[in-house]
Image (tube, rainbow over all chains, first blue to last red; front, side):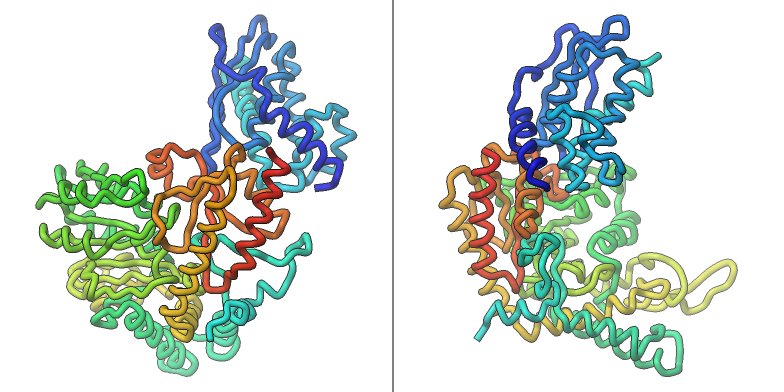
Length: 148
Length: 406
């Protein structure tokens, strides 16, 4: 981990893992996703309220490591207000950010420090699955019934 | 005089540094052990100087290989104190051995309404094979529960035993918690109902002497790679009459007497149960691992790992924010713990930065973790080469992790 990424890990991932602002269940959710990693037992329920193809509200609850919890917290914060069409490239950008084989530097992909912190996963490929757990689940749902 | 530092020097992996330049502190021995030079050299020599097939050919080097392969069977027989050499069957590992006994011994004997008993602390490998056959046959899988201390509830076991029970399968040691089970008590109780007993000894053989005659178990299995030997080889001990009454564990060449298009007749065990060309190099390497254990001796091995485990427990219990799982002091060299506020995977990643290898997660024992209301623990486990300095390095790194993450 380079020093800058290490600093971001401490200042952003750990802070986001403890951020409760988007934790909980939505009473008026239109979509509920289960993100589960059978290898480690991390499990999150992501609740979405989608109106006219726009994500109005997103929350989560569940249990997991700091990386998966922070990444789910950042996901729910950042997708609010986005349209379903906008979400797919956003998730793809996140995947590129954590991809240790990417030829693009993290800084060239985004300047958002909440996102940039997850580039630390490039140094720990075995933890990439923690970073992408909820993002992957949302992408799968987008490809499935959510877009129809 | 036993000295873990000189033992460590026999393991080449510790001569190099980690990619980040530290000494390797290897504390995941319950998953797999590092290999001594004697085992590595033996495998290299086998391939380089005497490689051939086994039991099929009358030329050198195959004759030499066959002799050496069968000598390992004798070494394992003596290691387990089995009554007969033909009670030792080589498999590809513990999981393979369990599946084979499930298919070849249990399946033909199990009927709807019968019962198989396991315990709540089993590794998935000693749960799922039995579970699947019970489901298929409409039999019941009953569970010896654990107490809050992590120990088996032996009184509950006694109430589960009836003449409907067709097998009792239990581990010698919890791979997740290091709790040692009272196998003599379990087997004695089972024998009262003539229930065959299957012992998963994957976590036992590296650290403690096994005597299958004294235990009076019907089956006992373990893996080579957890006792300083190579991967891909394991042992199934079965009482002679059990192995003889069982159909071959798998079918193929090397196990037959006569074969026609319509039918085949089979040799007696152990040959009957080892179809196909076996993992010869694995077995040869396993023999070197058994020699390695015998040279040090179980008395020294047990005393050393017990001392290291005691020291680690004392250090962990003295720390703030660490909860050791399982309330027993006399445990196998396996300790699970939780660091308050830090998920085990995050802890493992941080320790890796310090060159320290621990295991994080559910340890392939999800039912046990549910019982203890835990999602994941950090697990450290020791071998003959671990030192107090390894524990000291761990404790310092745990404190640094707390400072960084909390």
